Length: 331
Image 1 (cartoon, one colour):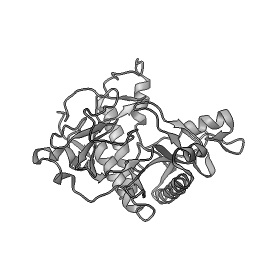
Image 2 (image 1 turned 90 degrees about the vertical axis):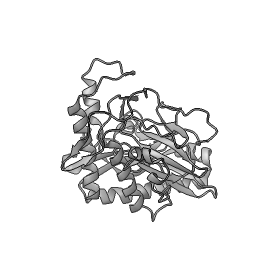
Image 3 (image 1 turned 135 degrees about the vertical axis):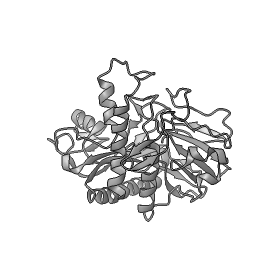
């Protein structure tokens, strides 16, 4: 979840992610099944009336809970090529929420986080509890640090493109001759500047972060980012998953203390690769929305809204990959 502003209750209207259309809030297709587990009907967009809506992102809806807390609802929306699809991925929001909570608990010894322990069901009206069950969290209201903290352990994505063009990633020189998806000699901190809502973030160097937030905070963000990634990657390796890269978001409380916030180490904010299918020289398969992207690439579509309607098989296979990542990490 990325909101390029400090949420403010004075907003008269809630910002909405580009391509997010008015549509039924809960899909009428009935319940979906993961293995032997019945899960709730997909939620494309929440519609809480008991709390002020602050913003809608590509996946999450944000509501104010008093002056010092926020309710974050992870919908089942999915985006591809910066377009939000009309068809949700069943269970996706619950998976993202559960995975974030797992990592926040596991990494809490490194840095404070946004958790409050408040039950989302206690802050909404009784008839709205089905919209938050299993997919929402009540968090501290923090001032976001408007820099994305990216950690890279492998050469892939925009880092691979940067390396091909310059021999470096975000200004960090690398040895010649590395292949796509190669494990890097050391984990890199490669920050990104937050773009305007709906646009791509831009890779920047460490000096940019220093200019934006000051050297002391920049160094703290870098050091914490590398430690979070390293501990998470080491644990994931014991579960047969490679975390190729990930992005963290941080915020400051009223005392200026740094907190980890928002989405943490999920398939939406990270590249998770099955270790048993990893190889250099290719873009390895991953636990994310690759099925959706691959299917969309076969369609006649100009990558502007509206996107083609998603076949149920593609949605189900995508949901299964998200669930598999959660099960592997937390079982």
